Length: 215
Image (cartoon, rainbow, N blue to C red; front, side, top):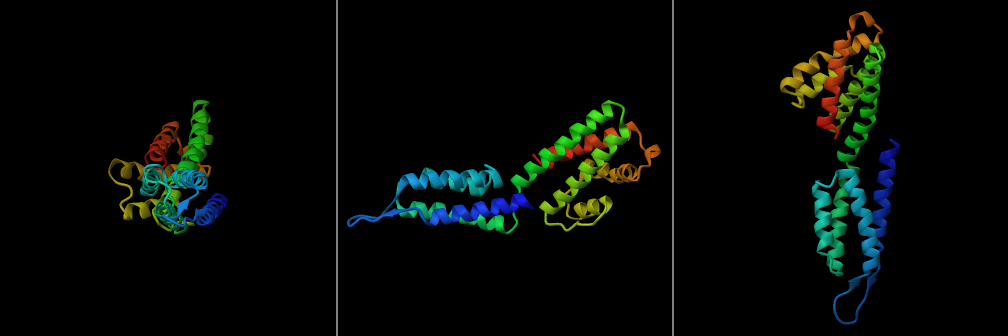
């Protein structure tokens, strides 16, 4: 995925920049960091970590704390480097949550808007296809975010995988069970098996699912 590759490259660039921040040697007293270089680098590092993991993530909060306590000493620089390195390690290990969810939410949100418009214009078949595509892809992305392998699986199999891990429950679980029937009718052009109410139900469920898991 191009976005992941670009982010990985940015992590590597910033890691290298952090290592190369100038240190001022002093004949008496501890060595100090070039503050201008540190602040420029730290701002870029915090922006990246915030975008990838979110401002409520431990990585970003720890970076904020390290930045606030910075007073020019090498120990403070090393502390910041350590937190950034941990964030990079988690990203490289595939632990990407906030950015992927945000991007997915934006993409699928546009599908939902288009489907709602089609339904309001009386084009239930078009709306059904858009809503089905959005929900199926959202379910698979949600499964991937939770370390489930669902490539090549049909919607019902994806739903079963989510259920087995306890990722859907309660009213959401029972509503989700009705979605494969609507999806199959839409994707196989069996328009006589679909009603506007079916499509509206799928749209409502998909919108709530996105709000709950991709925002």
